[in-house]
Image 1 (tube, rainbow, N blue to C red):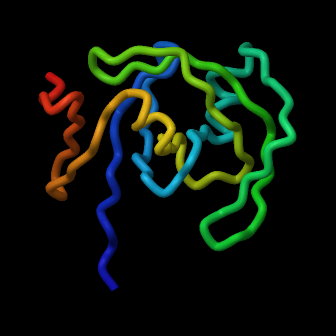
Image 2: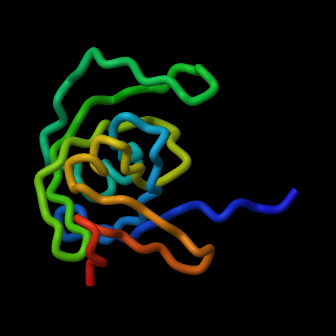
Length: 122
């Protein structure tokens, strides 16, 4: 079995560089508990009763939500991230983010390109 190249993008969260997985299968956006504690624990965490399950149906330990400033190239916005325990990735950008930023993704296995309103983002 060969490894799969996943679509990653380098983002800024509150001026901290984070590697994010671009995941069209996720409804929401997430950061790992480790990233939250290391970089953003000074930001208030909002409690939530939202339930999160994996693609296989297993429940996740949902630790709350936090609002962070996200920036990808010239796109910048305050965004809500759900904090998950034992997450494999630093950050996951879900379909909620893609819809709001009007972005789509394409990958040629060596680079990742974001588009906004049919124009390549510089």
